[in-house]
Length: 305
Picture 1 (tube, rainbow, N blue to C red):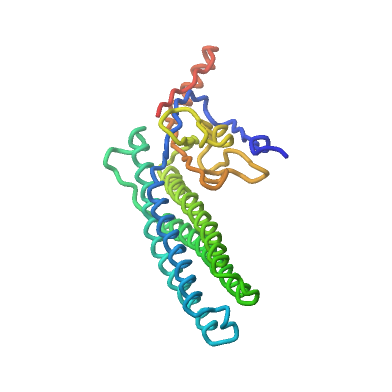
Picture 2 (cartoon, rainbow, N blue to C red):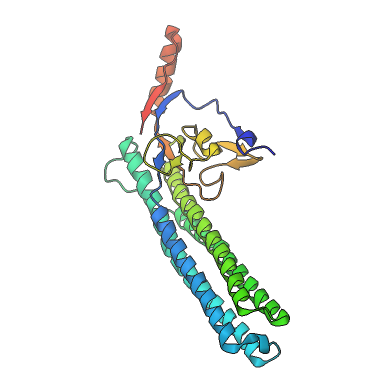
């Protein structure tokens, strides 16, 4: 079986200038993981409390003796009601925190653009309809992904209860089965929260780069601990993409035939980001022309982060 790095196809672009870049690998370069943790914490708590409530209902109604009695149907109705409440609560939380992640992307993009002289200090880039549409699409997609996890969890619980009633499964075994399902669902929800927070951040940043006329972006990988080199948290694909420069909006590579446009495209839980490369196109043309006229090798442009 081939590894991911063996299936990575780096895309080369002839119109990317020769650049000497110094870009360290950073811990949480998007600075959004605390928000992703907050989403995960809230979703995990909801699932955990839900699992606890189910166990209480199971004991309360002694469902093993109530398969064809009103108590069983009452429990199913209560489960459906809780699912509706859980969905509404989750959507509200995600809308708030994903908006913060998007704004964090805007803030970081603005800081980078200011530092590189693309905009004036203190200048704000106005929100456009593209921002509104993008935020809404990201929120809807993430909400759908996480509520799908919650719905599957509840469907699995219903199946466990039905099977327990039919087979007379001991309460201890039912409790363990529900705990396993809850842990699996919580892990899935946390993975989605981390991944989609990074997507929200980088989508916002890329939108700002396009809006201000940035021509190129560079991939910045992340690491687990302080330092500047890859560590065990930096995957081999993201390590290979680190420091790679492409025209904004163009794919960095293909992985198993699928384009990698921005983090977190390579894999779930990706923490990488994209940064802008600001080049004065007019000066660059003059520099290239002068080097050719003198028969000199073109020296790379130095870019430091």
